[in-house]
Each structure stands twice: as structure tokens, then as C-alpha cells.
Image (cartoon, rainbow, N blue to C red; front, side, top):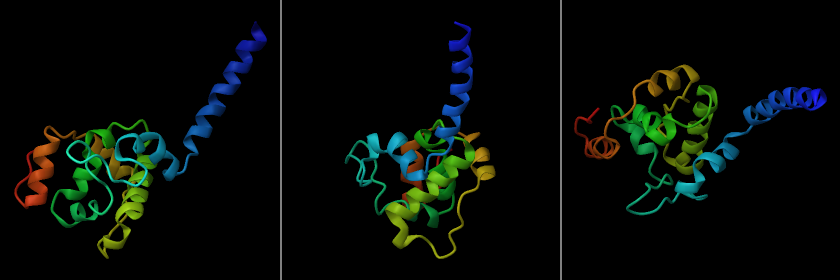
Length: 137
């Protein structure tokens, strides 16, 4: 019995290290692909497409922050650094051709601050950003 407990204590931290070592593409598969699909096409009327639509948020005030504050992003069970890497990977993978020339990758510190400001109304904020009006916060 003691040996099993010892093995469990040693094995669990090892599993945590393996999980922390996932690359952004694997994190996308685990945390995003179920809704946004492998090709980032989403489900029209239900789940927004990522492909060809993310970079436009980087061109409007509040858009960069919006991408990190969307509930599915902000509440992902990832460290701030892993989430920053996942957002950057997603932007490059699904909208890399239209990223602004001055695009700066997200940082763990930035993600940490944005996660502390959850969005009250995602749909209204998204609509306002895309229409160029003041977003609802």
C-alpha cells in the first residue's frame, strides 16, 4: 500500500510537467478545436470562425484585449504563458497573412492582467468592435 502511494506521489508531478510541455498546436486541439474546428471555421451562427477573422481585431481599439478576454480564452485551464503562446499561434495559424506589420506577441503578464477583466457581454462587445463603436465592457 505504501509503495502505491509513493508511486502516485512521484507520478502525479511528472504528469503535470508533461501537460505543461504541450505545444500551442496541441493546446489548440485540446481546448479550442472542439468548437472552432481543426480548420478554424467554427459553426456559422453559433461559434465564430477564427480563420481569416482574428487579425481585424488587432486593428481596432480594444480588439487585442477582446481576444484575450473572451470567456473561452480567459478561462482556459492554461498558465498565462501557455495561453499567450496559444493566442499567438492561433493568430499566426488562422490569420497570419493579415496580421498587422507591427504585431507584438502577447506576454504572460498581459494575459494575466486581461484575465482579471472578464467580458460582461461578449456578443455586444464583438459587434461594437467590428462596427467601430464603443465596446460594451
